[in-house]
Each structure stands twice: as C-alpha cells, then as structure tokens.
Image (cartoon, rainbow, N blue to C red; front, side, top):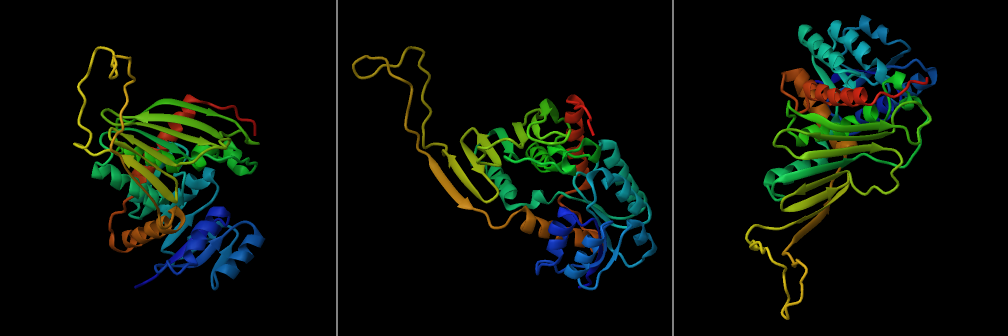
Length: 356
C-alpha cells in the first residue's frame, strides 16, 4: 500500500500535538510526514527531531515548488484557514484544513467550489463526528430505545481562563469558533443536517477570557418536526458532568467523552393510566399525590477511545481512500460549511466589540 506524503503547515497544538502526534503512532499506516512548515525556528528544529527525514520551511509558499506532496494539512491560525487553503487548492494540492473551516459561509462555499474547479480533494478536520461517544448516541437514537427524541443538550463547558490568540476576534477565535464546531456539528447531526434548521435563540458574552472573543455561548437550534437542541460553550462552568444528554419520550441518555448512563422504560411494561379529572384519593378518601413506581431499565458503560485517537484515525483513513480511490467520506466539506453558517449567524445576532 502506497503511503501518501504529507506537508503540515503549523506546529502549534494542532499541527504538532494532534496531527503530528497521530502520524507518529502505529495507527498511522497511510501517511509519511515529508515536510513541515512553521515560522518559528525552534518549532522547525523540534519537527525535524520528531519526524525524522522531514524537510522544514519557514514559509509555506516554498511548498508550491514541490511535486511530491499528496496532502497538505493546514493547521495555521484560524483566520488564515481560508486564504491559505485557497492558495493550495488553486495550485492543485489536496488539503485537509483544521476547524473552523472558515469565518463565513461564503468562505466555505468558495473553498468547496475551488476544490471542484481544480479537481482536488478538500476535507475538514471535524474528527469528533467519529468519536465513540457521539456514534454511540446516534446508535441508541436509531434503535428507538429512547422513544421520540424531544431535546438534546450539548455541553462543551469548562472552568478555565485563556489569554492566548484563541481569545481574539481578529484571529477568528473565541469559544464558538474554536471548540464550537464540535457541538454545533453534533447539533446539526441530531437534526439530520436539516436545511430548515434555525437558530431560535443565541447569546454570546465574555466571562473569564482576557481577550475580546466570546467564552460564553448559549445557542438553541431546531427544525420542523425535530427536537430542540440546546448547546453551550462556556469557560466558567465549574459543575459540568456531561457532554451530551438526550431526552426522549421513553428515557434519557447522558454521556461524557468516556462513559454513559441510560435509563428508559419499555412499551407494555407500564400500562397507560386513564386520566382522572377529579382529585386522586387514597384508601380512606384522603387526597393522594399522583405518583407511581415505573418499571425502569438502566445501563451504564465506558467508551473505548476518543475523538483524538479513534476519531483522528477514522478520519485520516477515510481521507486516504478519498484521495486514492475517490471513496466518499462520512464528514463532508458541506457539513463543515453548515456548521460555520450556524456560528456566523450567532455572531451576527450577538456582535461583540473588537478591542484588539
């Protein structure tokens, strides 16, 4: 099996500790890191050590001169995802771009069109769609064990402060652009990526950040005939015990990235009680509260792997066969565009003053 030559642009947390880390594992059987780009000399030297045999450059434009690159991984600052990706697509390179796909729907649509016009592969690193905990929730919904899904709650919350570039609007940063593509993607997934999805409520704010970009985001989405999806990306939530909670007509599923709990009832085990218009009464005629002991079933368990191992491996595997054989990927640029469209809409509804 032919390995594909990769050029990674950027050696920050993503380029070095997510993409680069995956390429150095035994799980990577499809790719060889041939080139690494970073403006910082210390990072370039580190890349040469951890990716033996690779060539490093300070300027990504040096890659334009080469003809042995099968895939460019764009893990630069979020505000350059669009411009740098477009340059490479126009020059005939396959590109995997980090999230967020772009700042606006227009940027995303333009990249999709550019890739098609130049007959190259474009993918977006939304690896959380392949995470075991998300896939498990979809399976349980499809099994029907929870009944009719009424509400989905998504929490990408934490209790921490940031003061780096991810707190600056000019860098296309903040909680919703940075972490938000994961829960927003899940939200759209639970809504079936319905084209009639609406942002029915949103609020952005600053809580613990040192910058001018949001670290408080509350968004409610829904579509005709679909559940209400309530999502948060908040940096000042000290009591957060789940990532996904699904409430159906017959039960509830709650999970974090590593484990889940599930409680549900089974049709026929709790016969329907007829409505009584009068006050309920006990044996001696005293008023009685309306209550019963339902026959319930509970499950709990753990997930094997996460978005950063299972998810990354799955995405890169699908991308390999997309490039070499043209197979479709489960996560498409169009899906990533719809995610950005929601984020752009929320920002338009909640403009924040730019300070920096």
